[in-house]
Amino acid sequence: MTDLQIVLAFQHFVLSLPGGAAMAIFCAKWLIFVEGAIAAAFLLSKKRLKRAIAGQAAVAMGLALIIVSAVGHLVLRIRPYATSSLVQLLISPPLKSSFPSGHSSSAFAMAFVIFSLDRRVGIIALILASFVAMGRVASGVHFPTDILGGMLVGALSALIVRTLHRDVWERYAKKSSPSSST
Image 1: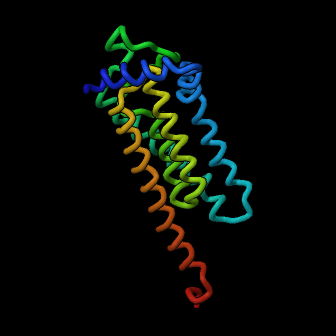
Image 2: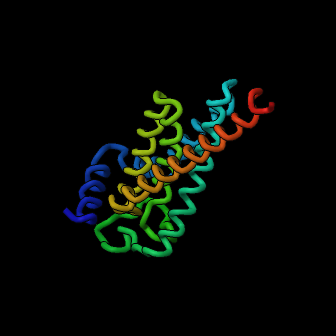
């Protein structure tokens, strides 16, 4: 099956469900904000580690969007709705390249950061990120390979942010520990 055939089959399935179009639109446009609110809710925690989740998720999301923008300028992939009149466009047409998916990269960057620090909430975030991604395909604005590219960018961004945070934290902790000040 080609990318376009998968989009058409998935869109046909989703749109055949009662409320399928509304669900696809909600997932494609708005669900990412729910995930962002979950990440931001960690700011309310009294635990430093939990509060760090919000900051790291925001940085990972920003890094993911920078990478997506750079790759998108190189790849310049046309979106599914522009390749076939059979694909229904359910949301406003995005103006940038289809590959990789910026929404998916952002959603998965946040989800992977959350998962790395809080497994239970992280599983929920990964499920939400998956629904964001599926909504983008069902809405006719991304191919499945755009989503996979976005997932990889999100995972890479989360890994970079988590690694840098860990390295900086370890250096800071060693410098500020009482035994290092002698």
